[in-house]
Each structure stands twice: as structure tokens, then as C-alpha cells.
Image (spheres, rainbow, N blue to C red):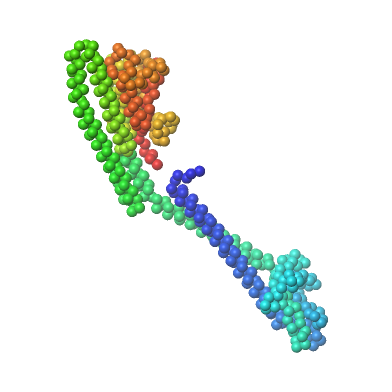
Length: 467
């Protein structure tokens, strides 16, 4: 699953890194502490071993004598795993000396091949005593007198002491690292949120531009974002200049063609009826075609502009007011909900498409026409650019005869007029379709509630949510 939030990405990466790093550090410290504890345990046994050696001698009767005091009560308690043993070697025979903790139990002794002596003639190995204790043994052999009589000295310690020590240390270590990790993640999260806060300011500034409340990114931004803000402002200025230049060129072209077309229309009136009608119809078609392509060129230059915005309610009220004056015998209804809807179109384009639909509805309506504007329900499937998150639905209905499905297909063709008795060029619906398509919207025709024609126009809207 792809994570789209920059904050979530950074937090996830820092969490993973911190977790891995703390686990590795915890294992490393625990391992080092274990080695240190084992080394200290072995040094303790070695020291105890030489304490026993220094405390044992051969008495007058040739017996081993001595009572080592190692300062540890565990050597006096049975089955603790802490023992010392002194055994005669070779031809020297005498009863062995053992610690009170060992009693009559013997300690398993591996062969020299299994546990060889080191250069100091000492060896260390682990065995299990009769009580089930896992013990570490420190062993050496020492000549006790000038007659060459020798003894084997062994001191043992319970390995569980080391294991408990390491376990307690590791538990405390992991708790400390876990607390440190959680604290670090909280600090990292706060630092990331604070560091990314300027991006929220930039987003809010872009939202104001999209809502038509501002024309540039304004605000104090850090150095890393300031260049981006400057580039965005430069892009907006460039886009505005392109739109203005396109408008100027469209105006110039429209002005240059207006007079020749008007001359053709005037001349058509003085010609013979058959020739005049032909010239007039072709001139009107040419006028419609020129206007259509000029509109398309202008819209193509500005449709990606974030500055295109028209408030729906005042524009629709103005159109309905004009239609009421032109059609005093028809009743016009207007509904805009919610009242603050805005359409991402230039005002003249919005008025042209809705005006064409109202004009057609008034031409064929019997008594009434209804225009309703609302937010489109949900994300629209099938509309071009369905990635937009906000759409506006404009519906124009009349109580006229309506159209059948095959007639609807014919009506959308450029220049096609289904009723020659009504005035018009047949370009209105095709112009509406082209303009709405240029803004990534669409036009749908069907039969409405009043059994007349229902024109449903889907257009991009303006929303505060620009995340």
C-alpha cells in the first residue's frame, strides 16, 4: 500500500530505523555485558581457587590440612553449586578436603583432552552436579612440598548467578531503551510536524488561490520552500499572461471577422430569395463556426488556470432575469443549493453554456422552465478527469414535447435542427457540449419529470479541500 502522506512516510521511516537501531544496540550491549559478566565470574573463581591453594598444606601426619575461608556463605550451604575440593595426586594418598556445601557428592571431571590446561596450567569447564546445578569449574594442580607431593584444586560456582545477572541487566536495559525509543519517536514526530508546518501554510495559500481569494502565494516561508513559492508565483503570472494574450488574440480575430460576416449577411438580404437564403445560411453557419473555434482556443488557453472561478448563484440569477424579460409568457424557476457554490469556469463560458440551454428550453417549453444548481453526488464515473474531487450539477428542464433517444443523438450533432419551424442555427447544444468538454465536464440529455427535455450539465466546481 502506497503511503501518500509525507508526514506518515517520515514517521514510518524514523520508527523503523529507531526500532532496528535500538534492537541492535540492545543486543550488542547485552552481549558485551554477558561476556564481561562471564569473564568476571571466571576471574572470581580463579581468585577463590588461589585462596584455597594458599589455605591448604600437608600436616605432620602427611594429611591435607587447612580450612579455607572464602568469605561466601554459599560454600557452607549444601546443593548451592558453590564448592571447593582438594584431592591428592599420584603416589600421594590422603583423604581429600571438600567444602561443607559439597558433602559426600562428587563433581564430574572431564578428561584433559576434553578440557585441556592452558599455559598457566589452569583449565575451566562446565559440568552439571548431582543436584542438577550447572556449574563452572576452575581447576589446577599444585606441588605442595619439597617431596613432590601434589594435589588437584577445584573451585566451582553456579552459572545461574551469571544468567540471573545478565537477565536482570537485559530486562532493565530493554525497558530503558524502550522508554528512550518511545520518547525519541514522540520528539521526532513533534519535530517533523513542526518542520513540515510551513507546507501547511503553503497548502492554505494554494487553497486561497484556488478559491479565488488570492492571486499569489503569500506568506513567510522558510528558505527551502521560498524557492518553490516563487516558482509557483512565476507560473501563475505566466499563466495569467498567456490567458490575457489568448483573450486579446481572440478579440482581435473576432473583431476582424465581425465586419466581413456582417457585410455578407447584409448583402444576402438584397440578393434573390434563393441565393440570399443560401448566402445567409452559410454566413450564419460560418459565424457560428468561427465563434465556436474561438471559444475553444480561448478555453484551451485558460482551462488549467487555477484562477478560473465563477460564483453560481449571481450568474444564474442574472441569466434567469434576462430570460424572464425575453419570455414573458413562460415561468422560470431557479434553485441553487448550497448558495455559495462556485464553478471552475470563466464567467462568460458558464453564462454561454447555461444561456444556450435556457434559450432552447424557453423555445420549446409550454409554460415553465426550471434551472437547478447543486453539488454533484459522489465521484462521477465516466466524466473526463474523474480525478477531480468536486463537481457541480446544473439541470435545465422544460415542460415541452421532449426528445426521444434517437432524436437526442441527432440534436447533439453540429448544425442539426430537429424543428425547422423554430428560429436558430442548430449550434447551441454542440457549443454547450464543446465548451463543457473543454472544461472536462459533460452534457446529458434525457426526459425530465415534466415529460419535457432534461439537460444535465456536469461542470468542475471549486472546493476548499485542496489537499
